Length: 458
Ligand code: GAP
Image (cartoon, rainbow, N blue to C red; front, side, top):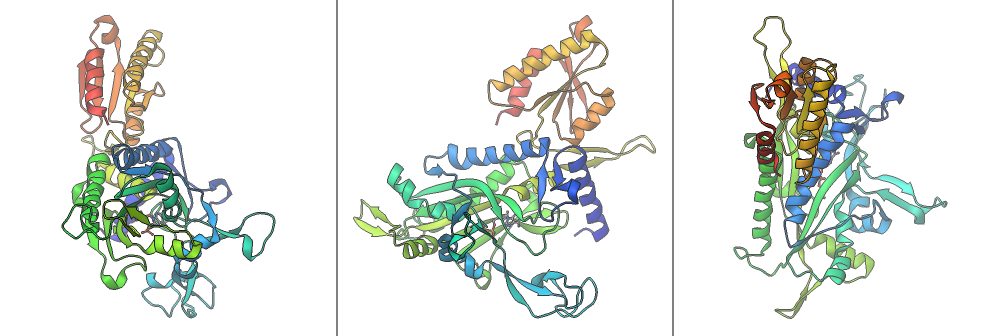
């Protein structure tokens, strides 16, 4: 574990780069911000979209057993009563009697003394983390609704709709990407713990009568997703394998709905913390909703002619935590050989997640002949890559070439292409510069296109 000041230093540099280069801004910044909210800028939203696209491709498009949905964020309040969130989605809270500041009790070492002013802390209370609102003009008990604290329930309440409309056979899953809201007592660590977040979740339904060891049993499905989650992290996101750790949650610490949970932890600069979760939710949710709504949420198995409530395996991923893992894993500083010169900073993104994949420059900005040729190369690359679904090609003629390299390094662009006088005078092709080594190579435009296609294919 790194020293506190070192951690703060790294995080400060990453937060500053994220802002300076248009990835992530403080929410409502010009008004002094709103704690626990962040806004994603042009490169941030592209990074996020690339992550979501990779997830959707792996977990929905490439499978025959997964059905995507997009449920409403506002739901009937009875959903949250049945799911257990109204009664139990809370964190322990203590308030200082002197300064009135509030803290999460389980984050405090000394539960008697205020960490801010030293005053006496009051008794521990449960604080429900759902944002409550009223739907419609009436503000009474019946109009209460909540901003969903997880996307999961949108899938349980649509189980029957998908079954009735598409008639999938077990095992099958529902998948969803969307916003969730939690009134966290202590949002912290940049985009690690937020009040407005995005989740990518799967509720995968299985036949509970299949014995362990057989295909389709909850145990085998659990193991399947466990491996898929590792593949997503390592092969799609390109995160360092050594930074991802599994944590088996002890039976006494499991959520009320879970019989088994594994947390996927990641080595963030501020410590080893939860990145994702994989839970065996049994038939808890379908049974709760069935009882509360009086609608049968079961399954008729044609083969055995039996009716039962499916059990559920839930792989759950936070989008912003993924962004943070990707950003912190990618951040690199390379000391300069020249004395007194600032280190080279670059983001070593996997090409699959990089917001800009290729940047094209004219060597000099004020030479029309170079600009024109560079524009031509840019158009060719854009067209060729666009034809195979790869976007993120940028034309850049701002400042001098050194500044352009610095900027592209800091936004994690893997390939920079320069058009110079040799390109035109000697028909010598372009130069390609590789971000991670800062080395350059000269090649023809057709070889370049081939190389980019090989290296960028998703
Ligand atoms: N449906 C299950 C569920 O929501 P969770 O462990 O509470 O389980 C799942 O959340 C994932 O959502 C976490 O592993 C994390 O990636 C993300 N997440 C949860 N709370 C978050 C928060 N306050 N800020 C950012 N991400 C969060």
